[in-house]
Amino acid sequence: FSGVLQLDVLRALLQLQERLAAVTAWVPGDGGGRNVTLQDVCYAPLNPQEPGVGDCAVSSVTQYFQNNRSNLELTALQQDGQHPGTVGWRDHLMYCVNSPLSFKDITALELSCMAEYGGP
Image (cartoon, rainbow, N blue to C red; front, side, top):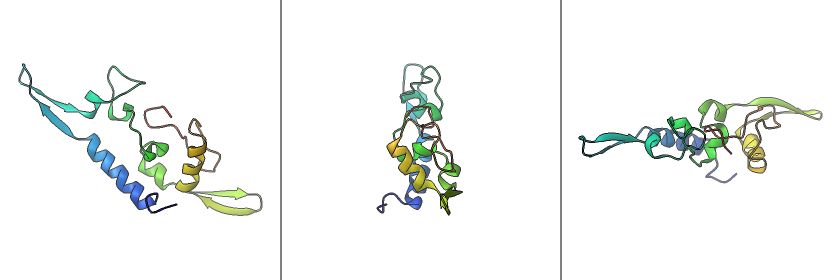
């Protein structure tokens, strides 16, 4: 992978997304105003009435890991024929890029490719 798709870059991206998801903005109004958050303005196709941050359809490579740091860091031993090896985030990402609608990859990680909000 190129320098953009490195584990430390993905960790930093995930941290930035978490910080952005926590941002609030004050919006003045007739009743004095109110704080507005990502949930107030995001597209949440599977929970449009009362979305949480995880319901927002945010397009990001970290969605292949459900925006979960533990899933990103996960590794597993896998036997491929007679050669044992370790699978990790790269293997999962390559699988998901080719099969984005999969609920479980074919690696020993067995992670879903579906995003945190439940869509592809």
